[in-house]
Length: 396
Image (cartoon, rainbow, N blue to C red; front, side, top):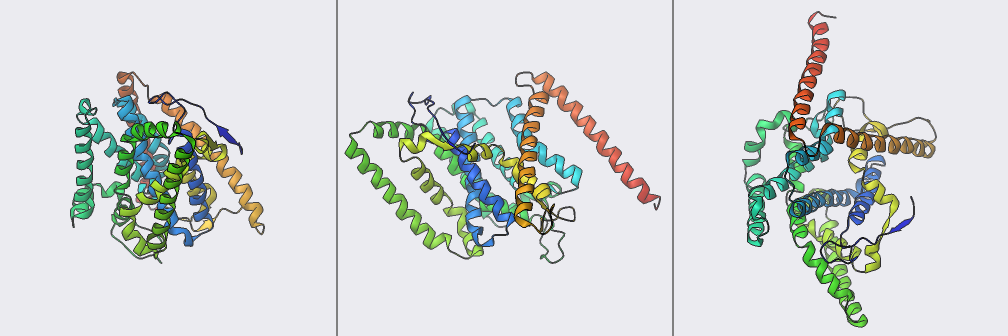
């Protein structure tokens, strides 16, 4: 679990083990970012706020990259695939919202990834028979940029478009010490920070085969020339990364947030280049981080209720879960072990239920299951509402 694993899978594009931005690598990337993201919450490490913003942007970049890669290569726009995708993103969070009486936006990562996944699906799904044409992909990406500009850059358009969905995307922090904002403020802030980076992920996914072929040619070059080119790439990345760090990353957080939507692609690109600069780097991944990368959604949702705690519905976690008072490090290790165990179990259950209720190639059965689930959910929700409302009306 704590070792490095070597991968030798061959690329479907080049037929060789180039392994540029392979699945193991992106899972590892998600894993180590998630560790730092969770530490940021647990230890209230406000000094790394800008780094956390970058990590979230990288997650959204992977949403664009991963979904584009799947739909562009597999061409699977079936109803079953769509429902499976929505189930994976939303089953656990909706369950938590209903059971714990929380708003969907408390778990803002879920609506964000759902939105950008839907936008990738729509971009490639519409007129998908023409996706093989480069000009069509360029037009679709340009339209994606235009849609983002209209919604997030034009004054008044965001509220006009999203206000009908306030009942889903609205959020008000119950903490009386926090300033009061409009219900859509949180959604505007969170979605707006990463409004462009999912499109950058799509562009990188489209050019992934081209870059992989370039890397194949690079690896076949004579040794000294190969090392020279890689050295130039590394130096360029270090210079660009340093300039970004000095002039963007070190800004005060509110100022940084203004630049973030337009600059987050820079450190992501630097990381990708450095992580893939040699064949040995690409061949190996850290097993623990790659494993954690598979359960990032569950660890994100679970931290609110297993690792951290709050005393009211919709409340942001302000305290640590304490099992052994007076022994913070022992408590940290114990709660972390329980937390990881439970979240991994939730990951398994989500996927098990997904495969049970969402058949891959039987749309008729899928429709029946959907109707049955909707009817059962309506009955249970109505029953719960009556059990809560009747005692209040009776003055009990």
